[in-house]
Image (cartoon, rainbow, N blue to C red; front, side, top):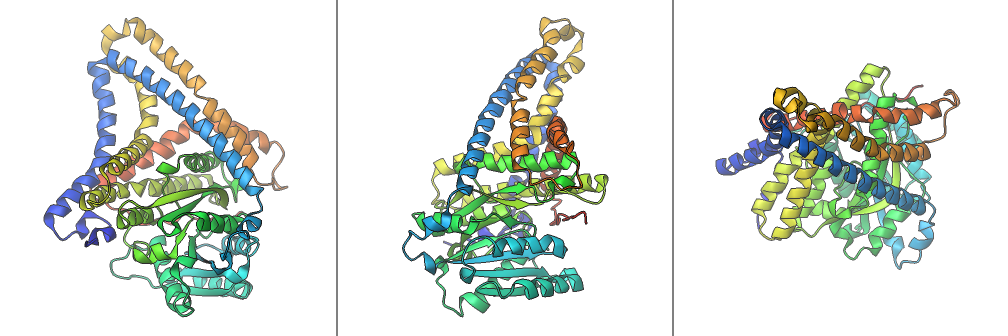
Amino acid sequence: MNKYYLKIGRATELKDWRERRLYRLFEILPGFLSWATIIACFIFSWFTPVGVAIFIIIFDIYWFFKTVYLSIHLRSGYNKMQGNLKIDWMLKLKGIKNWEGLRHLVIIPVYKETIEVVRPCFEGLAQSGYPLDKMIVVLAIEEKSGEAGKELARQITDEFSGKFFKFIAVIHPANIVGEIAGKGSNEAWAAKKAKEKIIDNLNIPYENIIVSVFDADTVVSFGYFACLAYHYLTHPNPTRASFQPIPLFVNNVWEAPALARVISFSSSFWHMMQQERPERQITFSSHSMSFKALDDIGFWQTNVVSEDSRIFWQNYLYYDGDYEVIPLHFPVSMDTNAAPTFLKSMVNQYKQMRRWAWGAENLPYMLFGFWKNKKIGIGKKIYWIFSQFEAFWSWSTNGLIIFLLGWLPLTLGGDKFKTTVLSYNLPRITRIIMIFAMIGVVTSAYFSINLLPPRPKIYAKRNWVLMVLQWFLLPLTIIIFGAFPAIEAQTRLMFGKYMGFWTTEKYRDK
């Protein structure tokens, strides 16, 4: 079966006009659903304010129970993560026959990051507690980074090249036809170079190689690779699975403004909760997988922005639905979005969230792939379509629904509605429900304190109090840095205004 559609990045790349039109329809759908929901809030508040008032009360109750449900998952995920950090994974790994034959290939793509950002990543690899003679490390530099990139490669090579089984620094050429300049194209180039220069030369079986791709600011926790290898070797079919750690955005959290900290912790907590729902898990940012699976699909796509989640869908479609993501319940630490000024931090934060929300480009890819692939069961297709569309629809609309419908019926419903008992009690009822829903804020504040790295001496002890009080900013972040960038990304996709890759600035307050 010809699976040419696995490499499609957008509708314009399809040659058949019927397929191109269908794919465009799928690209329009996410934004259409979100905008239809928002417009409906105004229309129904005008024409049927009583119905909308009843709906928002029911929706607020749903939100409350969803908050409780996710808070339980957060607590469970946190406890599992803490438990896994205490396990001697090397001891467990050594109990598995032939574990010594396994190799780790680690790819670290770098663009404009400084040595202060990249060095801790390599120090984490060297101090991970795993035998370094079983690790192949590739530093992937972008040609566009110029002399600064070459100098960084020289420094890292001088400091770390002799520590691992194999180490190479490769330069990804600029302006390759058909590529989007970004992380995916750099990773794919690096993996192909590792295959050419190391793996094939040494005749290492592809199924004996675990590929981990890390952002330049990723620092692995002690025991990560042993935990990863153990899960890989104990999986019944490890070449049909990706392995996902929990990204904790805490490297420079003390340096970041409060809004950025709330957003970063919220993102970390979301991924921690997702580990408790493995059936919904999709690869994100730093992740690991078999080199055999990576080679089978032809490596990461070079014509998409969200290559980290797209790699899951490539494998899922290639293997006819026989592919999954295994949660490791094990952390890797990454940077909070910070910049030299507050305004720059907020602009960067919005752009980062918009890039993550551009993951909606995987929805048309998924739908088109399901339409082309007849071997995937209808039950699996329905589940993924519902869960993925619900996730992106919730991202762009739920915060706005709670905010808008609390007052729209009172504003647009007319004098007749304003004289009803329901209109009088609507704000009070919704306020009470939302107060109970604050359990999510309390839970988040508690776990954020536990996950904080040691406080630098330059910050006063009173900053601990601010780390708690910052969570009252959560409603603001849900709308401004949640719903708005998600709506923008989906609207761009709806109108075919395709985004390029935006590299998040990595800042250190020296």
